[in-house]
Length: 150
Ligand code: 4NP
Image 1 (tube, helix red, strand yellow):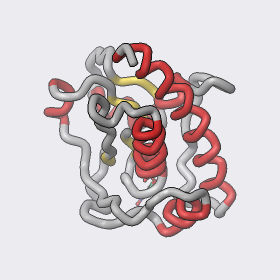
Image 2: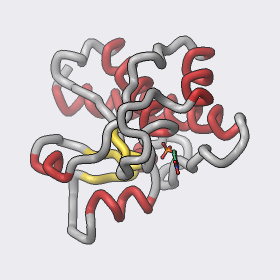
Image 3: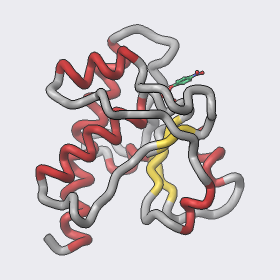
Image 4: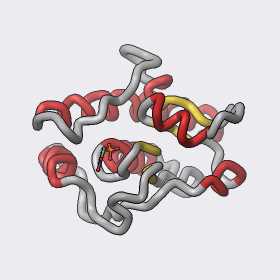
């Protein structure tokens, strides 16, 4: 899961998708982690507004530490899910990369959009991110279950 700062959007996608994977009994075969294309916040916990939104919904927001995206991962991970088109451009650096997709390509309600950056906006933006991430993660875990045959 990749966004710009790895403190607002991709940590939410990481925590929620990890929870769905564990609930589906897929945590032995599917590993989820997150990163930012920028190094601004490396080593820090998530934005307090993301943490508050996750905690209120019953998730553990305490374990996240921001890290920067490593281009070596192109050869090491199966799927890189980016939150917006700028993340896509930064991650692919102009190359065709079949394994890099918009996270919301898997949104079952409104596919193909961006997860909008809530960093400079109000609290409501964080709730909207959680809504998109929860429905997309629920759909995505079903697809992964099919892929791994569970
Ligand atoms: P994120 O949000 O990419 O969802 O983590 C942002 C976090 C920090 C900044 C921008 C976006 N920033 O400019 O510091």
